[in-house]
Length: 387
Image (cartoon, rainbow, N blue to C red; front, side):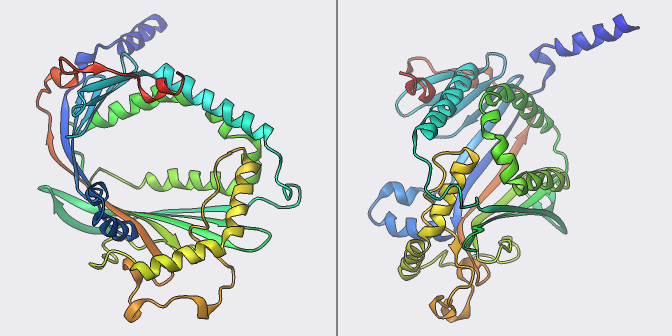
């Protein structure tokens, strides 16, 4: 019996790639609103590239066996789990590069070694021994609202993911809050989409070996001891994410700041107004607030030093506010309306949408995973960093 079980397991592991089915779908991603859009609209008057940042990016995702391709008009990325390579193709320059998983792992380990060496050489902050690191808190929730609608011809139900992160300077009492909300419309299982999910699972196993060299350094004992709230928040996220069922065929994600740690409203709860963000005066007010909160920025930098993450900090005071702000100094929203579609104590930095369509289990042409003839091979970014 033991021999038979071993043989069955061996055959399962050794199944050839033809046992997988093909699958494809289309995806459209677009930045739809928030303060970033307002600034890009202003910059777009002077820069074509700034104007194009709000144009939709239309991509096709293909899965064939142990290969996945992400294709759009500007680039193609091909992941090959059998060869353990990622190929990037530039159709404009007619160039391509190939990086192996092993090269990625070596580059990450080298980056960690350099960061640790720089940290050892840098003089410790003068207040390191007396200034405790900021206290970090994460809050995550998933709500299945019960709302339903059709998306791309599919029946979908709404799920809203809300996440907030609060950093509190234990000495000054200053706090900074970041928030993310994702309004998702989930379709029941789409025939064939399991090929995408299974490919991602197989890739996660492969990539775990890539990150294994860097993660122990990032998850240092100092971080575990000083930021228990961070890791309990990650556990809560895993628990809440288990509430999501189906395929997210439509998503609207928001990122921004809140003054009191409350979550940003979802797109279905508070649509963004046409203005899409602050005017020049509001941007100037934000810049002034950033300068006033430089002390909090310094505290964040000290926290990075405490937990062994050099280079994090220099946040420009973004999102931080004094514990007891002067009410007279707070700008009032125009006409009493909440800015950026958010509550008066919040601001949406960016809103983006993702739409999935064109699901198909038809055979995928294998040539879509090949580099076109005549293209020139160049060094990848990982390889350039070691030249």
